[in-house]
Amino acid sequence: MHILKVINTLIILIFLNIPALPQEKENTTGKYISWTLLQAVPSFGFVQDANSNDARIQLALKWNITPVNFSFTANKYVSPFQFFMINPVRRNTGSIEIFIQPELATASYSYNNFNKFGLSTGTRLILPVSEMGENISASIGGKYNYRNLNSGEKYQSFGIEAGIYFIAGIVGFQAGYNFDSRSRYTFNFYFKYF
Image 1 (cartoon, rainbow, N blue to C red):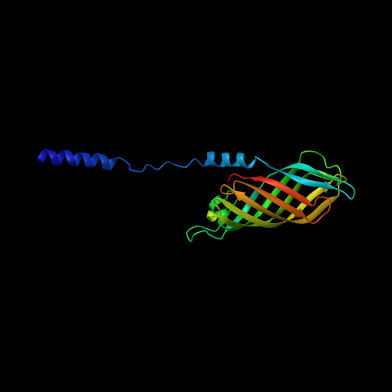
Image 2: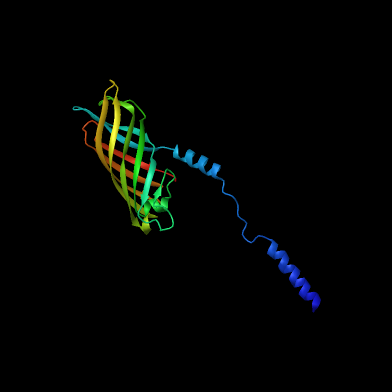
């Protein structure tokens, strides 16, 4: 009987020395490198190229940068603010964000004399539609467009946009309306992996 107690005690001591839940250190370098590479993948969309006589559709590449996001549903233990690397659950369950959208047209503008590169900045309100935004979320926002003309002049205009997003906000569609007849409409296929 004494030997069984000793054996049981030894077995217990051996198992107590084995870590039950080993804690591995997070590879932050790999995390930020992969995130940065995924942000470099552009969304594509269509923009209007028009003057008073003619109009056409122009293909453009867009990148979506979110420097600041404020979540309405963050719990009391974490800050409602996130910067650049935004958690998709916090974004799509209800939030407001500041965004920057660089845009590069794939060909020269024929009618409105715009430069191929443009930039939009603005704010966007994201609200959940289905399953707290994990399946479907929607957005509405306002933006300010900056673009140079080929003649060297500056072009600026206000615009509004609305979007619908699927699969935790990774893919979606955005439609925009700019308050200028030279490039009034935009339609984008949205892709952003967080």
